[in-house]
Each structure stands twice: as structure tokens, then as C-alpha cells.
Length: 123
Image 1 (spheres, rainbow, N blue to C red):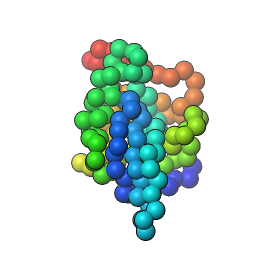
Image 2: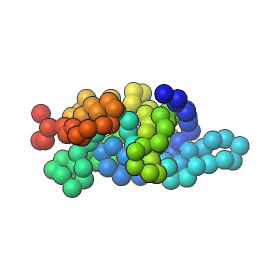
Image 3: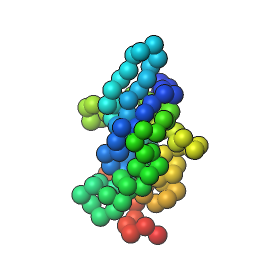
Image 4: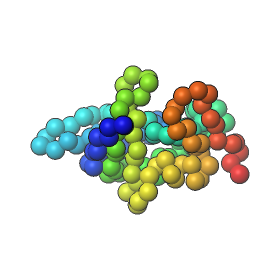
């Protein structure tokens, strides 16, 4: 799978436990504004489900508005308008690793089939 690397991204908003909105600075004054990044390889609970708001809040704590992050895009998500990506945290590691380790997301390698849900309440 081809990966496009964007080392200069600014967090604008955390939509839910696995989707983040960023501005991407391509350099030389070229920007992609308000890009939705779906965390590739994981699934968090939906906002309407128990634990969904808590997953969003945890991710927002990892990626506060204005944070500078690195995003590796793995292409378009199956839902229009989002890219599948890995978000590297400012303190090291990835958002995916931290969300799974903390119990707010479950591994969903290929994004196909029934979406897994992390247990709730968290262990």
C-alpha cells in the first residue's frame, strides 16, 4: 500500500474516538484544510454508544486542538471525504497504539466485516 507522509499537520478537532480533523501543510504555502483522518487499523465505539464520548475525550486529550502532528496517509477511506491514516503523537508513538493500549479502541486491521468494539466499561 502506498503511503503519503505529511509531517506538518495541525489538529483542528477530534470528531470521535477514531476520526480527527487536521490542516495539512504541504509547504510553499500549499495547504489542505479540514482533512478528516480516520485512524487506520482500529475502531473505537460510536459516539451514540456507551463509551463513545469517553473514547473521543481520551483521543482529544492525546491530540489537543492546535497540536502539531505527523500523518501518514494510506489512501481514501471507504466513506467519502476521509483518508485512512496513522497519526503520530507529539510525545512519540501513534494515536492507534495509545487508543488500543488504553482500551478505548480495538484492532480492526482491514476495516472489513463487522466492526469490533472495545469492551465497556474498560477493564
